[in-house]
Image (cartoon, rainbow, N blue to C red; front, side):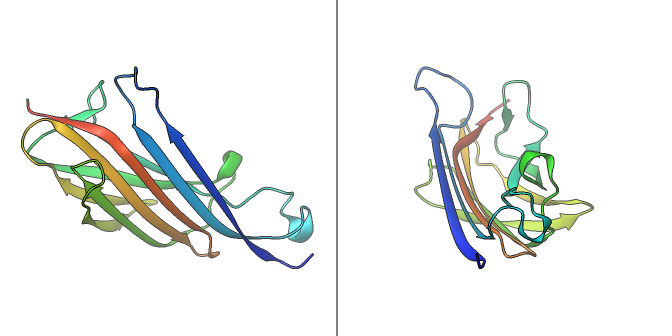
Length: 152
């Protein structure tokens, strides 16, 4: 079977009764796939996952009104290495995805770092990322209410 472009979409929403964690996550992958076992792929889909970490407190909060660094890393599916990043863009929203602002992203060792300046006062930060790997796999991911910001 010749290679073909495949798409996979995932949407997850948290239970309204939960007080922490993202309200909604949407992810869309686009990748080239062949029949399992061709070219030694062993049937494993080349789906990278984007990991976003920062110096959050124990309640997944960051300080309001201050610059904040986010570490971005790409993980492969089921413990397999992901192809290297060719392009990565990140945006932040402070109004649950109504408006978005681009964030500066820079390469840093084996990952990337993005700087976000939080507005003053309590609220939430939503994140939207677009990643393309060197093998052409693409991931578009949106996390609504990814983390909380709180005045300290």
